[in-house]
Every structure is written in C-alpha cells, then in structure tokens.
Length: 301
Image 1: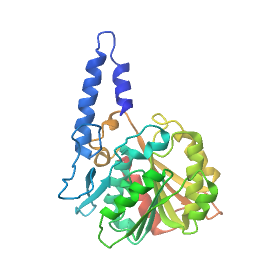
Image 2: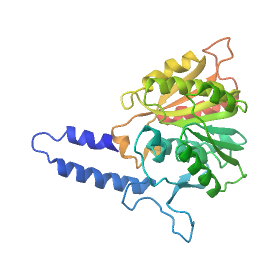
Image 3: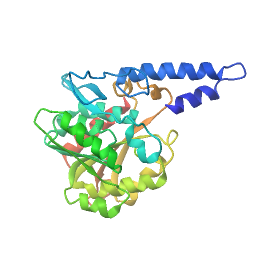
C-alpha cells in the first residue's frame, strides 16, 4: 500500500498537493480492497461476514473460480492488531497471496490427492485455496500469534474431499527445525512474498530443499527484484541447493485483477523441483511436473 503513495508523492511536481495525493490514495486503496476482500483499517471492505453467519469476527470471505468454472470460497480470520514490524508481517493479506490463491484454484486438478505445505503462511489464504482437492494442507509461520490464528482459520473451512488442515510453528531460517519438519516431506511447497532480504532467499531455498519430497515440487510467487529487495538472490540460492527452477513474469489478468499494486508491481512465479543429480538441465521428472510447469508458464500470458 505504501508503495503506491510514495509513487504518487514522487510524481506530484511543483503544483501538486500532498493532501490531495494522500486522499486519492486512500480512496483508491479502499476501493481496491473492497474488490478483493483485503482488510483495510477503519474502512468497510471486502465481504465481512455477519455475526449470525459466523460468530467469530472479524472474518473475510474470499471467492475464487476453479478451472472447471465451479465457485470456491475460503474464510480467512484476520488479525485486528495490524502489522507493526517485520515480525508481524503475517498479520496482513499481501497481494501476492491473492495471486497465488487464484492460480491454485485455477489448477486445482493438479493438486488432487497431493500434500501441500505453505511456508510463511501469514493469514493462510494460499494454502487454504489448495484444500479443495489436496489430500492434506500444512500451514506454517514463524510467529506464534499467526499460527494460533491459522489454527482458528483451519477450523472454519470445510472442503470437498475433507482435506486435513493443520497449522504449525516453523522458522525456516532454523535449519534444524526445517529438517525436523522435513521428516514428512510433501508433494508441493507454496509460498508468496516471503523474501525481503538476501538471507531470506537462501533460507527459503534451504527450506524447500528439505521439505519437498524427492518427486515433489514448489511454486513460489515473489515480487520482481525491481519491487522487492532480496528477491534477486533467490535464483542463486536455488542453485546453491542443487534445485532446478523456471521463472515466469505474472501477466495474466485474471490473477491480478483488482490489485492496485498491479499498476506498478511485477510478480514472478517460480516452478522448482529437485535434480536427480545427473543433469541439472534435465527435463521434468514426471508428467505431473510437466503439467504443473505448463500451468505456471501460463501466468505470463
């Protein structure tokens, strides 16, 4: 949100009004937030559920459309305190999470029967969006307050196929903790906008290497380096772990519609899998990997 305001202030020129720029920014942000269901302080946004629908408030309902046209909905328990520092970054719904959630529901058939782990889950939207067809969903975060909130959110959602959903503490900068969690490797790791410094990039790559099963994969959505410091280090971080990857700029309108940041932001989708150790330029190890990459590649069109 602040990025948009900064850009407006930078483009004021001599005759611009700071007050007018701020007012326009607030009005536009509130309008956009109402379209995608993102919380915005002290303004009426999104689809806030009534108390007679769900007793525990504040809640937001996110609506998606599956690839076959079916409607999908995810309930998200918001955290009213809001972000105060980097430790509370998971208190907000970041646009990249909406982008990833839309992609996951669009290709939910590729998740059928798979185990999914969301790293740096925050409010958990992306992981929960995979739950319609996945076998199990694990949401992890490094903030205990966020994990507590995720546990409540898991209990509010019921999905077709009754995918199991659980929330756990995991600081993926802690190698030992990541290795402990990796005792149960998963088919697919997902994450969105979880890198804001170089150390994050290397920690994320290490967590992916430890958590993904030998025949598994990862789909990660990050802002482009021009929009987020630290993301430029993600490709060499993946290389350092011996992971094979493909990257695509996200241009598909159905993934970014209603996001104010799309006017000046570029998100990138990474498709990642483990090398057999014989050839790091190898073709995809299975038809599932090939189909999953085709779906990721489609974000650029």
